[in-house]
Length: 228
Ligand SMILES: Nc1nc2c(ncn2[C@@H]2O[C@H](COP(=O)(O)OP(=O)(O)OP(=O)(O)O)[C@@H](O)[C@H]2O)c(=O)[nH]1
Ligand SMILES: [Zn+2]
Image (cartoon, rainbow, N blue to C red; front, side, top):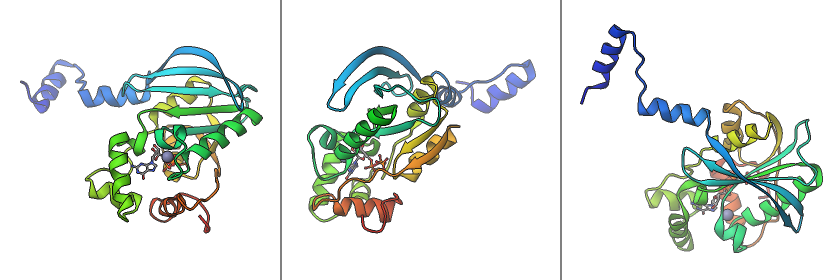
């Protein structure tokens, strides 16, 4: 097989352009990242959301956009970009704040207009369900959420928000009020060219999630106030 340097030298001589796999992946991150493949309505406790199912052409994950019954206001709509959490969102686990954050986001987006973008493939901050459950087992032994990831040889946070940026663009949103306490999420969306004003999304502190929230505040830099 020809080495990349040789291919580049050959291409330069012949006036050709070399496109590597890495170039193609980078291009796909920016263009044609998602495709809307299904549209329907979803009646929920918070109202009926126009619902769009997106295929993520880079990762193969399926994502969902829940558009408020009031639609998407032209000016700085309210947006929640939510990472999948089976245990919190579906089973109502109180180890984390995901379930109450999702409910509060849907309630506010329904009331004010805007969209909830639900990102699948983000489970366990990107490491997947089984590794998150393994990390929980270590947390049962006293490790915090960061040290549990490291002890398992896993990244602390492996999420990238390119699909969310692409979905928001597809919905015509360039500027938004983003419901989040996570500065890294804000930075990634800003780096994707979107204009972000953050709106805190603070939910109740409980006996079960207080250490988790404190770790997010102290070790991951989430804006959770002194009392989290
Ligand atoms: N690996 C791992 N993932 C977790 C843990 N607790 C929650 N998660 C995952 O973390 C993701 C949610 O991320 P968070 O850090 O709670 O919050 P965020 O979405 O980054 O920030 P906000 O926008 O402020 O909610 C979900 O995918 C959860 O499955 C944990 O202890 N270990
Ligand atoms: Zn969770």
